[in-house]
View 1 (cartoon, rainbow, N blue to C red):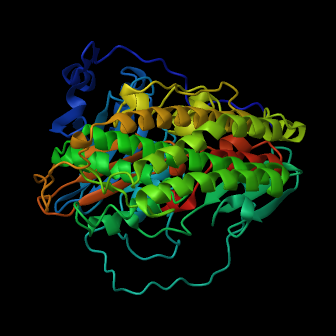
View 2 (cartoon, rainbow, N blue to C red; view 1 turned 30 degrees about the horizontal axis):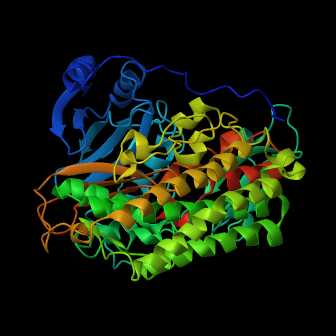
Length: 564
């Protein structure tokens, strides 16, 4: 039940044919669309970059969204050069993510600011706040430009060139501002109550603080307070070498057994940046191990969600953890680790399957053979449960146009009927050689998002089974696990790339810019959980508190990936 009928903030747009040809994007036609607003054009590895004035951001982005069909702002990257600051809006299309465009907005060194993209893409709200927080760029007309990852009292911007890492930070104790402002009250001046949920509460899936305002028993406003797990992973990667030192870090982002998916995001970007080929055999190993990680992540998502919704610890949660343990045993046999795998290498993988290979195949097939019966049992226990259905059906509604505006991806987007999966739509690895289906549900509610994850486990099992068949028959003399990669990688200066993979939670992307050294000059992580979490107010306002807890659980966030 809602306080009022929701109205979408942005009009639903249909993809136009402007700039589209049979061969993909026509950047010349897109340049003509922008006219004299286009200052310059840059070559990035993944797409062209259009340089525009900082006071024309909204005008340009509206045209690119409404006229050219770029309805997905997947990432916003901010960085500082010696002579300027720069914001890059990485634009894609939900219908075809291979059609990409980077909108580059330079701003002066002495006064770094440009127009906010928030009126065009609501996902820019948090992305621009992060850019302000870490780099120091201000965004005009932003609805709430303040720090998002660091404390309000933090001095300086950690990713700016003049930041002094040795300077102590003193966080002063101060009286908290009154949260019951006028904009948190209902129109009839009903009494409101402010409720803190978290940061130390099991239902927040980590150290997340939800500032919630209730109007009676309904949620009038909710704000996610993040940053408790922020470690400035991007700066850590910028201080590490491409070849050896960065790869262990991705395992720490989404640490729910999804480490190989995280590693693949970095590997894909770095391999494109340095023009590294990956052997076909290694691609099969990557694909199999990544889908094992996806199953492990979805099983834990199911177990914790059932715990959130009706408190079933013994049956659902422990069943899910037990099956996840079987997956982790296989991953441990393959990688030597249960969480921080560090299995992928640039150009391939660290090592081949464990010996004897027959035992590994048998163990994997046993898991796959048991999966249909286990999934049937989960459907009997969970999706057929009357309490579960009452809690999840028609709660946490996320309309597809809202999901697109917030840049939602993964099961959150597919649960709103958005047919978007980078494994198929921007294929990598061995996915395009295998038989599997992209799962979508049209319910747009908490129930649909659970169904998507459970059905995706079936598809992952199909993919793994085909990979095992291939690996069993692969000639021993052709089992090349890694291409010949130079010991030290030094991509050409000012080479830029943004590449993403379909991680367990959605689109996990990496932007990198090289400066000719063996370390990236800029390393930006596009976290799917970061963008997905922005949808929580849309799903929760007007609902009851238990419905908000269910909505949060259905997002399947991991704070290590939200905060990075």
